[in-house]
Amino acid sequence: MSAGIKLVAKPGEVEFPKGMEGMISRESTKSFVNGAEGFLCYNGIPIQQLAENSTFEEVCYLLMYDALPKETELAAFNQRLLQYREIPDFTYETIYGMPAYTTHPMAALRTAVSTLSLFDESSEEDTPSALERAGINLIAKLPTIVAAVARSRQGLEPVHPRADMPLATNFLYMYTGEEPSPLYAKVMDIILLLHADHGCNASTFTAIAATSSLSDMYSSVVAGICSLKGPLHGGANERVMRMLNEIGTVDNAEPYILNAIARKKKIMGFGHRVYKAYDPRAAILHGYAKDVTRQAGTEKWLQMAEIIERVMIDKLGKKGIYPNVDFFSGTVMASMGIDPSLFTPIFAMGRVPGWVSHILEQRADNRIYRPRFIYTGPMDVDYVPMDER
Ligand code: SDX
Image 1 (cartoon, rainbow, N blue to C red):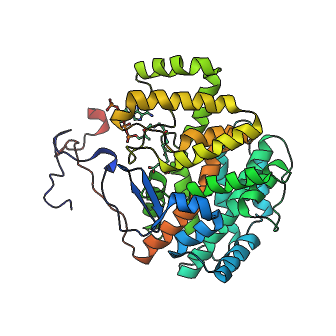
Image 2: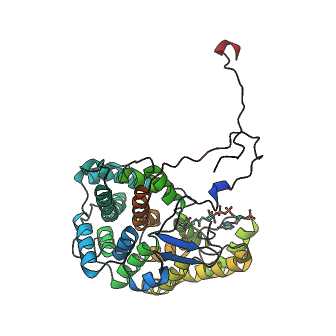
Image 3: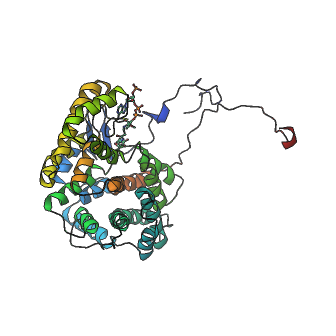
């Protein structure tokens, strides 16, 4: 591809899409996003049908194996997830040894997930079955790590995983120490399912670039976590909640957002590199937000969010700026009593099957990622000895 492109040039002399916008990195069967139409499917199944009928575990299987499981296949897959839920003592000790009040939750997640490979005797085994097993291990263990990080930050002992409830339910149980209501268990499952995959987003691209050098599954997933930690990718829902709390009242929502738009501020939870229409995941979460805020008594947040949504679409919809997945997920999770600092680690919990499935897909037909830079530095420069500088 770079053949014929001027690789040594003056700054700005050669045109290329910044942020690799619109560039193709590989073929994939995992998910497709039609940004103009606000459409998302996993292996051909529209996200609305999956939210309506599937579960997070079944979606993990769909993404990893490109097919919905038969009952026996799903039962076997669930059994593997169950047996991998518990994390090594060393991982608990690492989490509880971190400075609880100053450690960024995504830094805690990145560090704790890194310890998992030390206790997987086949973590360096470069075979499809070892990679697959490591991926399932990560999907199963992230909720246990995120719940332990949350409790350590509150000065609470960890609650160990149980084997008698689905992954999303078990996460809320480990986080609060109590079994969640059926509504909250269902909504957490939906939140994870909606975050499971999303084309070649920054963290997925980071993960497949890492694995393309034949780096192991753990390292490649940690690379994805590192990318998701960035505020342009993860954490927007946490900042949405900060914005709602700053606005304070329903009456102040419209003046606040009009003022922010006038000052050309980027409003968190809006805009997207691919979606230039309503993010279908936001629409699904908006639906659940009505039930959750009613049960939690936080309807005020939803009213504020709906005013912000109306004004933003009115003012910026013509520029393709619409709510993205982060806009309502914050309201929903905060209403469920989840601390906003946990929102991005929960996004990571949901996205692990996407990272894992793309890593496996990359490995099945691999070539190391090696793009080029346009060199705009000086040329033909001689070395200058220190005493002549
Ligand atoms: C996720 O890639 C994925 O798939 C990501 C994700 C996934 O599932 O993995 O969907 C998850 O990351 C969702 C996005 C969460 N981030 C935010 O909500 C942060 C706020 N959003 C923006 O920072 C921004 O919209 C991005 C980063 C999401 C996308 O930015 P782009 O494509 O690089 O667009 P841009 O910054 O070049 O902006 C283009 C124009 C600009 O206006 P002009 O200078 O042309 O006049 O749109 C404006 C921007 O000012 N704009 C916004 C805006 N986002 C873009 N204006 C107001 N508010 C916003 N949020």
